[in-house]
Image (cartoon, rainbow, N blue to C red):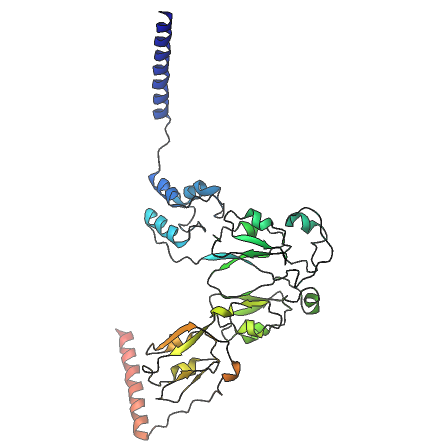
Length: 371
């Protein structure tokens, strides 16, 4: 009988407490934000902090509240941005994929060690000792702090050269390596960029070359080689305007120390479909590298001097120029001599017609403005 009473009392207490908890949960319930929950569901869940917020929950709160754009998550990229934009009812816009790159080629094969470091295997700790153990104080120390910080396993250390190496396929552009590097050799740069500056030592001339074979000496040859004004010298270092860069890689060709690094294996070249070419000479006049030959109204062809900038393909009125990956090295000697275009000679009757057409056009434009 005593056991029965105990069971009844415990059952009654459980029911009472359950009712109290249910009532409390309803009274103090926090209203759900379905839009915020949908945004959180769309995020990748990496909780890397690359967005600048404390994990994916913080990022979702900021996006749902309008304090952050829909493309705030660097890991998710454009696909996640489009999903979130659909949830928020806005346009996602184009998002360029970024990757971490090592802005240094100062491995021990190019940049010698000043002394043997035997301390803690950490770049931050080693940088305290005489600005690091390498002869260039701006060089990557290759002790793996960035690799340990990367949550995606996208960085490893080349043990023979003592320098960090990024696997761009794995990199999610969270930026953790950038923030943790004491030497500032990690930077986020556009993934599609095939040519870039691989040095951040602001020194000039012998002050750099005596410490590193592949350091930028500030000579400015890369800037002068660029035909598109995409490079300027800032504090002794070349700075690339990616919106102007056409990946022609002429800057890397001109660089005497290979501090301007280019992926020549992916260099492009123009190809003219001769059966479609009308010989308008637009491509030849556009090419700033004298790499296209052909007389007016004759089939044109591209020489081995082509740099793959693609300017001719954009200007071709017949769209008969395509770009492909170059399968042999560029030959600068194949450039043709640039000739001044011959001005057409008109008869007096033709000149009179041209003048009449100009006057008619001006009168039409004036009438349009009056209306």
